[in-house]
Image 1 (cartoon, rainbow, N blue to C red):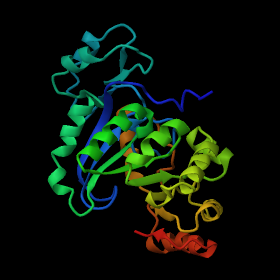
Image 2: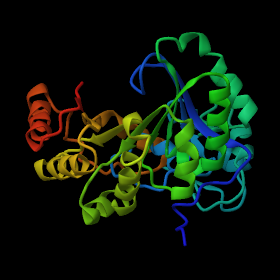
Image 3: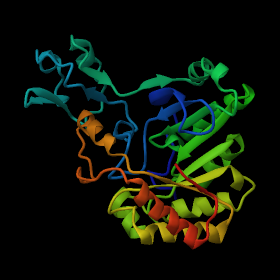
Image 4: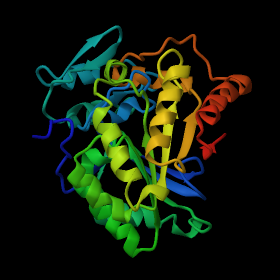
Amino acid sequence: MKSLKELPMKISKALVFDIKRFAVHDGAGIRTTVFFKGCPLRCKWCQNPEGLSPKRRPIYFKNSCIHCRRCEQFSRENQMRYENDRPYFNRKYTGDFDNLIKACPASAIRYDSEEYDVEQLIEKIKEDKVFFRDNGGVTFSGGEPLMQGEFLVEILKRCKVEGIHTAIETTMFASMDLIKKVLPYLDLIYIDLKVFDEKLHEEYTQVSSKKIKERIRYILESEHKDKVIIRTPLIPSMSATDENITSITKFLIHIYPEVKYELLNYNPLASSKYELVDLEYGVNIKYKMFNKEEMQHFYDIVYQAGLKNLIKE
């Protein structure tokens, strides 16, 4: 039986929290990156905390707030509380927040995402089609795009009809049935393997790495293996350890020695987003990006373990 975390969101519309145009780091060429809401993981270092919840939620922008307290005046029972000169939204509230958004005269309260049906989203993507030459295209990211899996399958099919190159950024923490559905419609597959040790992975992400490794093995033993780039985000004191990088590299080589592998430097800038969603960043703020020498140290570990197709910054 599949866990609730594994089950895709079966909806006729997708919740999208951002669409980034002219992206150059989410695949080859110039791309449009679509960020889907919802993720089964809770990584302590998540770069997009606004994409974690599968629900459409309000976000508070303190720099826009004029502290008129109209949100408090128009709030429903158990919807929010007003403390420290700002609103705090009840995460367990099951209704909408339209009343608060309409009541705010300064647009300090906004939804974190927009709904799109397949036709609306494909038209949005096609607006940038002229820029997709030279291997550009669309990348589906998140959150975890497979959380909205049935919608993802349909939008991928439409992209193929339109001749648009498709990529995904995923943990592959989803059912095998869904993975088999999406693979034929993907041209490029970025898969995160963050921490090899199952207990440590669960400590840092709240899910085991076992299923992720099983799905990586399946794909790297399939006809889709040359579409894949495995990524490890380098998080100080968590994933950025010699033991972790060595274990991941040996695991990949054992399955497919020609696999492409990328180490992502730590990005501390995401910590500023956490206040927007009333969450706490899980990495010590003292940590900075790794310098060239430190990155080279991790590259050397990969090379020494025997993997040659390493993608470097």
